[in-house]
Amino acid sequence: MIHKLFKYLHKESIDYTIINGYKSLFEKTNTSEDVDILFKKEDFLKIEHILKGFCKLNDFKIVQIYHQEVYAKNIFIFDPNTTKILNLDTYGKLQRKHTAFFTETEIFKNFSTYKGINILATHQEFLHYLLKKIDKNEITDTVFNYLQMLFFKEEALCKKMLKQCFKNHSDSVIKALQSKNKSKLLESIETLRKDIVSNPKIPLNDRFKDKLRILKRIIKPTGITISFLGPDGSGKSTIIDGLTHKTLPFRKTTYFHLKPIITNNKSIATVNPHECAPYSKLKSYVKLLFFVYQYNLGWLKNIYLLKIKSTLVIFDRYYDDLIVDKKRYRYGGSKRVAKLIRFFIRKPELYFILTTNADVIYNRKQEVEFSELQAQIKNYKALTNGKQYYHIDVNRSPDSIVKDVYSILMKKMNERY
Image (cartoon, rainbow, N blue to C red; front, side):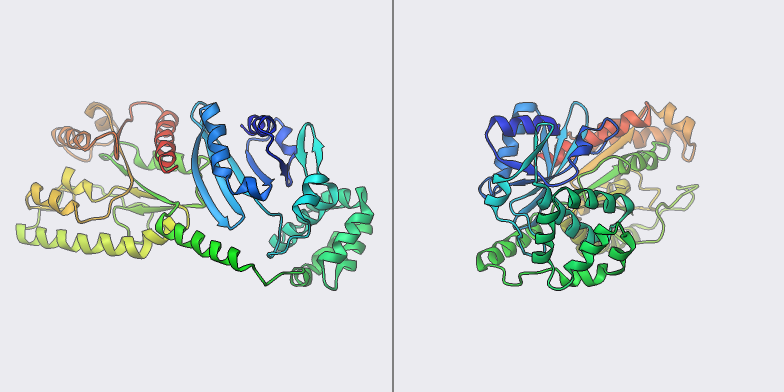
C-alpha cells in the first residue's frame, strides 16, 4: 500500500519526506507497514481529505485516526482485499519538545531521495533520529551504528546541528560517535535528554488547537467496544485470542468477562451452568436493577476512559446472554422485562454472535441438554440484525472466522470516517 501512496503523492504533486526507516520499505522480509511521513503544513491540515482521495482510488478504507498532537496524526488505512493495514504517522512539523530545528523551507528544498521516494537530508535525519532514540532510551547497537553512518556522511553539518540542539553537552555526543563508543553515549543519556533545547512558549493559536483536539478525543473517543456471544463450545475464547493477534488500529486491547468490571480472571469457566435453581421473580427483578447499576457505573468508571485512550475493549459475553440463556444466570422473571431492562444498559458498538448447527457445538461441549442448546442457538440468531449484531458461522477454521470478524470490525471503524 505504501508504494501506491508514494505514486499517488507524486502524481498529485504533494510534497512529502519519509522521516526514517525508509530502507525497510523495500525489504521483502518487512511485514509491517508502519511509516513516519512529513508533509508541508498546508497539506497536513487537509491530510484526511488527501488520504480519502487515495483510498477512493484504490478501494482502501480509513479505519482509525489518532490526533496525537496539533501537527501529528496517526492514520490507519485498511485494504479489504488483503486485510493488511498501513499505519501512517503523519506530521506537519518536524519538532521535538515543541522545538523545530529546521524550517519547512530547509526540509523541502534539501530533501534527498532513496529508490525514488523522498527522504530527509542526511543531517536532518541524523538529528531527528538521535533525539527520538535519546527520548525513548533506545540506543541499541543497530541504532548507534546507523547514527554513526549518518554522522560521518555529513560530519560538519551534523556537528553544527548538535551544537544548536544541546545547550551544554553536544561535545559528549560528538566524542561518542567519533570514538565509536556507544557506552559513552548511554552513560550521559539522562543528561542529554534534559539538555535538549526546548521551546516552552507554544503559540497561543497552537495551544487553542490543542485544547480543541483533546476535547474532540473526549467527545468522539477513538476506541471501540465489541462483544462475543454464543453457547459454550462456540469457540469464543479461540476467536478472541486470534483477533488480538492481528494488526489492530488501537493503542491497546482490554478484555472483560460479561460485565464492565475489572477482575483478575480472564475467563470464568462454568462446568454446569444450569445446576442451580432460578431465583424468585422478586429476587430476579432486583438482580436486573443491580445489573443496571453495575453495567452503567462500570462503563463510566472503566470503559469510557479506555475508549478515549484508543482501546479495543472486548467482552466475552454481555447482558444479552441473560435473555438467551436465563438459566445460567438463575433468572426466574419475565423475558419481556429482561428485554426492557436492556434499553437502560450501555451497549458495545458491535456484537459477534458465534453459532452453527447444534450437532457441531454439542460434539465440542455437552454442558447443557441438546434441546436446550438448540433453543439457545435459535435465540442467539434472533438477535442478529446485520448492523450491530452480526452472526458468524463457526463450523470452519478459526483463521477463517477471525478474518470475517476482523473485516466486519474494520468496516465498522471505517463508518466513522
